[in-house]
Length: 99
Image (tube, rainbow, N blue to C red; front, side, top):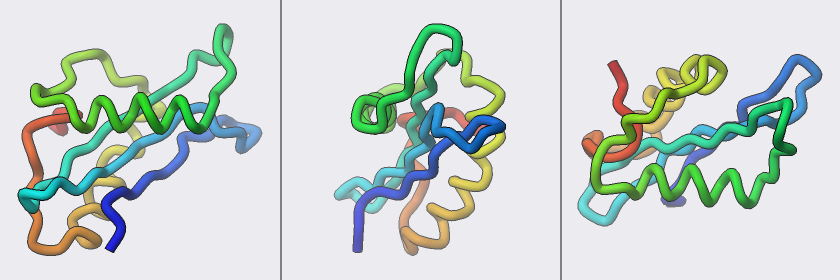
């Protein structure tokens, strides 16, 4: 079984501009992370985006930064997908806070 799931956040032209990631930990928990490029200033790089999302998922404390709307739309879908894929795993309190 793979330890990560990810989905790209896409703009209207279907170009990737961000990523939402679910990461399974060794203690049978999983956490979510995200990355997003500001369209006016940044060009999205998949490797860097994956690295940033992974860092947020591994952060021991919940991420308190404002999550962009485009990313926030995909979080519930990723949460449901992670619950189904990582069976018998509980949600960790690290990564993104899901209200």
